Length: 371
Image 1: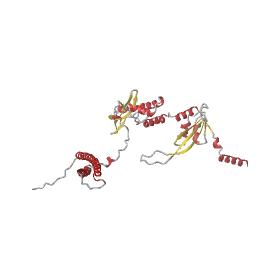
Image 2 (image 1 turned 30 degrees about the horizontal axis):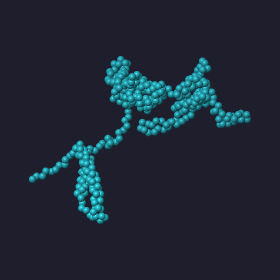
Image 3 (image 1 turned 120 degrees about the vertical axis):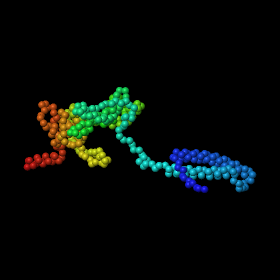
Image 4 (image 1 turned 135 degrees about the vertical axis):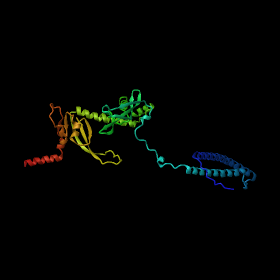
């Protein structure tokens, strides 16, 4: 009689999971039965002790093992066997499961990059950007490169799809791809269109709606714009347009001020990190302090303490500019004299000439001249 080698039966993950679930259910049912039997055994033990006291008084007498105790022992043995089978099935399932990829087990990185507006349900408005000059030269249109921006108009949001034409230009038998030149925008490569930024600015400053309320209102409309994103665009708009309060005060000082006392001081500025994340060395910048008509104190930052920086700050000023004798201010008094007395007039600074070191030098000059 030939013997047949027994081959191990391979179980799929689904069958193994079902087996484990069944064993766990049986274990739970067995545990409930054991608890019920233990409770019944406790009650019977109390009744037995009461009967013995009534029959034998205080005499202790050994009694035989009851059928309930035998049943309880069998149930405990069955529970132990079920637990062993369950542990063995779990270990077998772990061994049969495929080894996960370490890259997949790591926590998912926070998504970065631009939001995909093509996945939204907002209406789309395509805008083609062509180059008539290249087309007049006979350049062949190859394709369009699409980019999106979130725009706003009365009635709701929509997606502007900018389609920039790509041309094949042949010069000296060499073909190159030349894109059409898009028009200049206030916020290049920005997610939000200028109309959306204008809507945020109007809502905050004209209607008095703070960002957190506008965020909730836009979320009710199905548009997710968090308050941090809106704050960054508002700050960028103010810096780009010079619409901050400090910039407005500086323009008013230059246009209407009668006398400005100024001086510059150097300061170390920490630059942004390099592309590889390394910190760069500090660079020296300069802050100009301007006391306007003894009424306001303003500050302006420039990267270099040069004549060009002074001209950019005070070139349109038409009053008295009090400063030290630094050569960078000479550019304001150079050139052809104006036809009127409406230009800037440089005046000296007594604080520099009345320094103790300067007084000692001047006094020494006087003593030497008299001797």
